[in-house]
Length: 118
Image 1 (tube, rainbow, N blue to C red):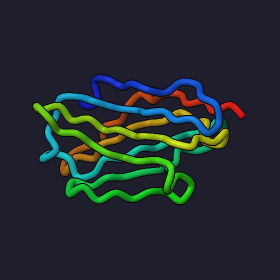
Image 2: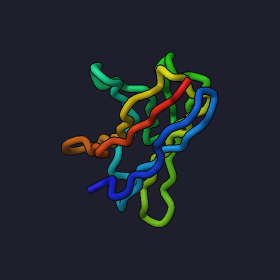
Image 3: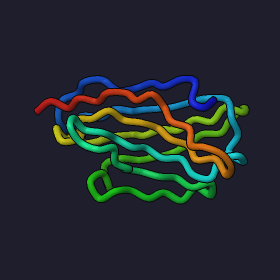
Image 4: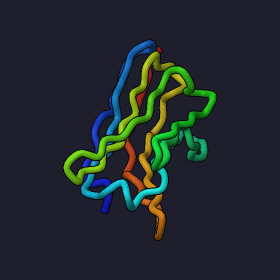
């Protein structure tokens, strides 16, 4: 079940960049939307970015203009990417990838920790 591989995350200084990705064997035809969520310490999991089957992207105001969501569907591998730029200490959180199929339950990644130091 997607994703089989998650990568990215780590520690970076404020103003720096990180790239997160989730990849697995699936096809975009089965997927309605894909998204990234994050959960800061002591807080609930919040949606931050979404890309539709048609490629339309939307962002939460907290990341708009700094983060970019994209996907790649080459060779029956579905990859979701979050490029994070100009990171701030308040971006520190565990980041989760999600895929919502047209039918059935959502797919979730296990989460990856991003820490931004001031």
